[in-house]
Length: 114
Image (cartoon, rainbow, N blue to C red; front, side, top):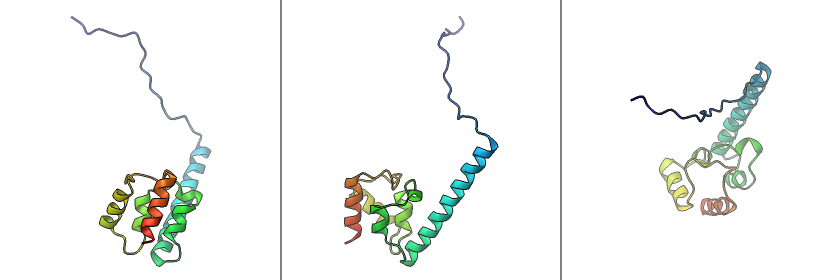
């Protein structure tokens, strides 16, 4: 006996088609963001930028960066310490800086200031 067929069409959503110009603009923006983030991480490592200020008032290009990556750029903060801090603040390792709630943001900054 053949398998039963359904009359409902399968829905597949594909990404919208983009022109070459649109793709190149997106690539350029992504490269600029990566460059700014790399410089910011170097500044955090050198102590020229405060992680507290970064978390309280993040620039646009940091909104989509992972909190873990920003914390790991700070001197004396390794994977184990960062994981422990995030666990105590109930923050997922995949959370972005822009995705932090006010409670999470304030709790994280107060914990880092100790």
